[in-house]
Amino acid sequence: MKEFKICSNKYCKKEKSVSDFYKNKKLKDGYQCWCKDCMKLSLNNWKNNTSNNVINNKDYNKNFMKNWYKENLIEHKKNVVEYNRKRTKEDCLFFIRQTFNNYLNAYRRLYNDKSDLGYTLDQFVEHFSNQAKEIWNKGLKPRIIKINKYKKETIISKVYALDNLKIIEGSKINVNE
Ligand SMILES: [Zn+2]
Image (cartoon, rainbow, N blue to C red; front, top):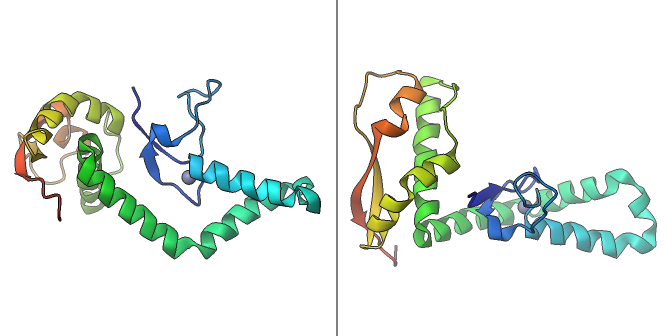
């Protein structure tokens, strides 16, 4: 089951738990594309302007969203950082997902490897969730390690193949960090 989803509002793009999205059975994954915050923002804007005839203007809502995020961008970015920091501390699966994603991005940047990984981040989390939770429940951070280091510039699907990865006990989770 999917646990996280990225809000598809291009001015938001925040990764959130699926509980931060309204359900919509008509959609493939069962959730709205935009997160609750963006839906609310958009709806409020629409309501506030029904009297001004602007709802007939197709671009209005789009421009509003763009401007809103532009005006609030610094605040918004701060919120995203803070949100990720908090989630990383509280949520084991979010933690391994973020950590792993950072590893992948670093590897891709370093070796300019844009090739396909062969599985999704959701599948990664699902594959290691039990092991990670077990470690997390001991008050330790799950550490993702590669079994075989391989030579530099080996394609990412080999270096990061699921059976080349292992989760071990890492440092203590520091709640006051
Ligand atoms: Zn959003």
